[in-house]
Amino acid sequence: MSDNFAQTTLDMMLSRLRNLRAFMAKAEAHAAEQNDDLADYVSARIAPDMHALPHQIVFACNQPSQFVAWLRGQPAPPNMPEPMPQDWRALTAHVDAGIASLEKAQGEALAVPEEDKRIDIAMIKMHMMLPARQFVDDWLLPNFYFHLTTAYALLRMKGVSLGKGDFLLHVMSQLRPNA
Image (tube, rainbow, N blue to C red; front, side, top):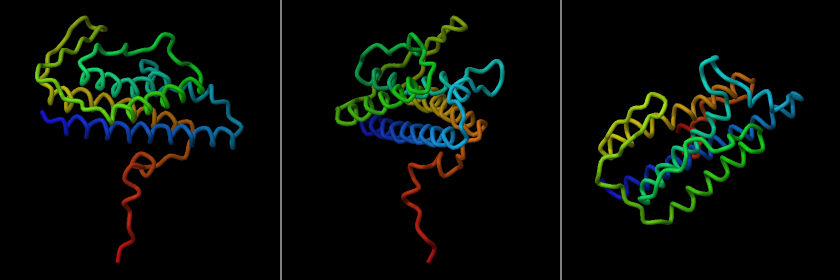
């Protein structure tokens, strides 16, 4: 797998984390306008058996940082920081740190490892081995988008004015009027 593939994947994840940060900025503005407590946003969950907003944000940030560690040949950072950020300020700091980490990685010469990637799934005490490209395409990116999309949906559920243009913020600069 080419180094270009690794960089393209990092660039894509970075732009989506910037979108997440923009969702959060809109949520802050909405909360201020509505006189809402951001703690209510933090506790939002779609269903009782799903993680609340902090987990969605943290997991969306951790997928890219684990990818960078893999590219560097380093052990993956933990999936959940201890303690898990539970307030808005800590969550925005976590996103900002994730963005800064990816910006730093952009300047590095990173290569995708040739060997298969082992994925341990602690909750069910099992693992899988995937070739590098399948790991990225079938595991890493779907998980990343799942948590990013869930965070978006939770903020929408709280009344934040987010639309498809916010989710696709990374390409909105390409819009041109029809001739």
